[in-house]
Image (cartoon, rainbow, N blue to C red; front, side):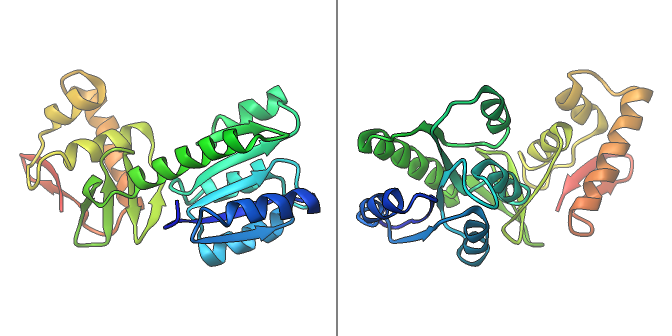
Length: 224
């Protein structure tokens, strides 16, 4: 953990000071704030590797803060702390790719386990061997199946993700429409699938740098 940075957001002063001292033992840098607005500002400035957030913070609660972060960043690990395991909030949290949802009061043993898991996840997602790099600034994480441009995540649909996964699976290979249809829909290309594929590629190209996906006449598609 001592190579990573952490942001800790907690509105209760005594709890914040107590756990702040504890967290500083393990992380290279710990940013401590008292509300969600401060947490968002610090996140934008320092991009911490792990965030430990109280769910019921003033101004901006922990889940809403995480939702905003997840619009562009799926790498930063997030642990949510809550005094009440409310079912509706749990369902909302399921969409936010959290490392852990910890009920308060938190034992230091459980917190340490969650921090260890967050550290493990972060390092796995950032393992350089897991990335494919492209000349135009794109990089593809093979394990998490996340595409980045200049370190910002590009939001992909299910079929866009599958298409990128296939096109990056063999360097410089041109994949035919049949090969792509089999991978996306487990079926050969037909008129319906041909139209869907063209739509998927058209939408995907709008998200990527120019000429990332090349159409080779009468052969298929490749990624540059």
